[in-house]
Structures are given as C-alpha cells and as structure tokens.
Image 1 (tube, rainbow, N blue to C red):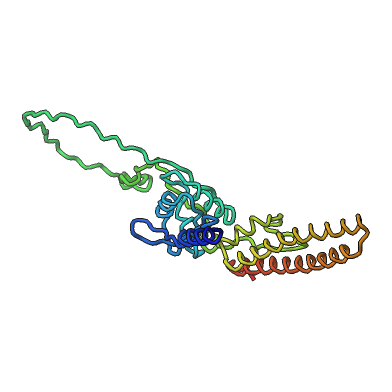
Image 2: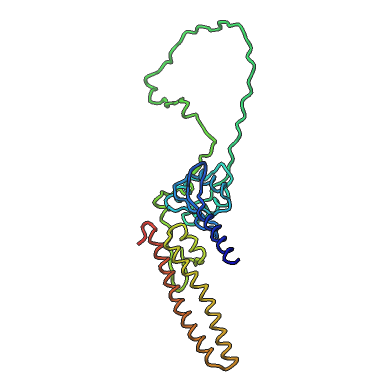
Length: 286
C-alpha cells in the first residue's frame, strides 16, 4: 500500500512539474517545481502578456529564465498602468525596484469617453450676406521696423495638454539600471549597500540573477539545517556523559562536534561561491 501511494505521488508531481505555461495557444514556459509552485518563462513577454499569465496561473510564482527578458518586461511597465496589478506582478516589481531603484507603477484606469450629443439640423434658406470690403494693407513705417516684436500665431504654439505622459519606471539608461550593488560575505555576514542582508533575501535575489549562485545558496541552506541537527545530537551526547559519568558518549559528542565544525566550513565556502557567482553576472563588476 505504501509503495502504491508513493508511486501515485511521484506520478502526480511528475505530471504537475511537466505542465506548460500556455496562453492563447502560445507556450511561454513550464512549471519547474510543483512542490514550491514555481514556473519559469523561457521567452520574452510584454507587461500585458505577463499580466495575463499571472491571471491565468494565480497559484504560481513566475520567474524569468533570461535576465534581460526580466529587465525589459519590468521596465516596460512605466510609471502608470491601466490595469490592477496582481500579487505576482507586485512581487516581481518590488524586487526590481529594490535592486535598481525607481518607484512602483500607479494604477490609473482609462477614463470612459462620453459621446457628444447630436444636435438636430434645421434647414434654412441660404442668403448671401457677404459684404465686400476693400482690403487695405497695413502701413509700415521703415523707421519702426526694428522696434516691431515678431509674433507667431501658429496654432501649434497654442496647443496645451493636461494629459500626464507615463514616465519610465527607472529614468536611468538600461546600462546604468543593470549596475546593481554587489554582494559581500565578511565575518560570517552577508552585506549589500553597507547593510546586513538576510540569507533568505540573498537567496531570493540570486533566484532572479544567476542559477549557479542559487545552487550554492541552496547547498549552504541544507548544510545549516543538518548542522543544527548534528549539533543538537552532540549536545545530548555531552549531557548523557555528564549525567552518567560515561566517557563513551563524550567521545561520540566530540566526534560529532568535529564533523559539525567541518560542515560549517563547507557552508562558508558555499556562501562565498554563491556571492562570487552572483557578482560575476553584474555588468562592470570586477
């Protein structure tokens, strides 16, 4: 029975993980993790297409396989949008603004256009009311020509608009936008912009920028979880040795402690590798 349930679960997860992101007959990507409900876009999309995908798959976290596609899509939102942002759109835009600066786009619905009322047309007899007036040109005194201020009655100069044009999400050039602050790992702490960076946020940033950095961060996370468990086991061994005055549990605890110290060293190396891979994809970073 247990084998049957395990096989069924593997089949369900396999089918879910192979699900394609399709919209109007176009394949945009696939589900990469059924457990974490994550999907990855493999083609470039416009803001409108990304919005439609988040509406079609509201339960998924959608990521971009290509960093430039992510960059172009987020910059395409501008400062004003004509639709209400979904939670997945807000998540991606917040991450982009946090790394590159700028402001979140504001929702401004399209104003409804009210048609002008049609006035009835009354028929009337045509009468010639034109009065011939003798045209007389203006008299110009040559001495006053220099004092006459030039005038321009062009209708182009009289046009004014009150429509607020949408500004770009980030007013800097695309090259400057891509120059994001590097990440550092000093004295066992992750640092960005001279401030401490939580491990979870560093992992989330690497998820967008570089897959190799994400792989090293995940390895460091797994090592830390197992190190906690091994450390707890070593503490139990030392406690047992003290209570029963037995040397064997103390030796076992000392051996486990040595393993934990070695694994912590591996964890620090994994984080250093992750930081290196993350910084290596930043333009202009050496």
